[in-house]
Image 1 (cartoon, rainbow, N blue to C red):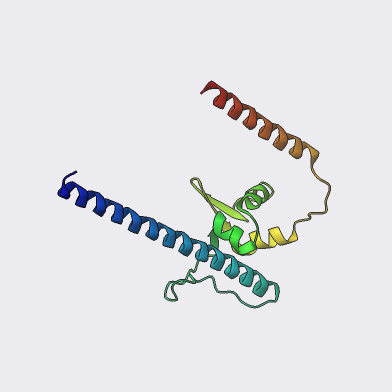
Image 2: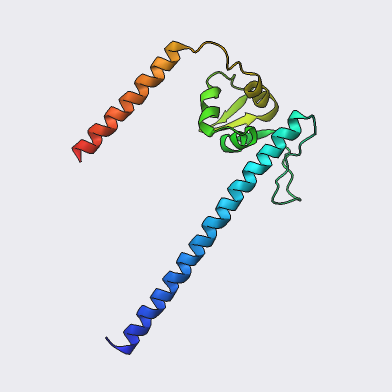
Length: 153
């Protein structure tokens, strides 16, 4: 191997090592941000439960205050301390233009009304067996379709 080609391979290897290190750092920062988001959501929820006013400002920049009480599904789920799936499931019982608004495919939750709805929903009520049956059939059909797709490959 020529010395010039060897230098190129060494440079590529060093760049790859730096890229891997940077990707690890990014993953660590993302994990810390997720942990901070969870802590903020927990603190906001506790503050609201104790009647302390909560600012909806962007926590990363003190100069960028959010005046809209609307949150995306991900932000609303983090705020409420539940999964996005639970929010999407509960949206079936919510009233559009009261608890949430749709803008194309994007769903925005109105913080006061939707938060009250989630907190006050009656989890002790009897389960709707029709809804559970439909959900189960839908899941089974999806699994069957996936198996058929994998078998066809």
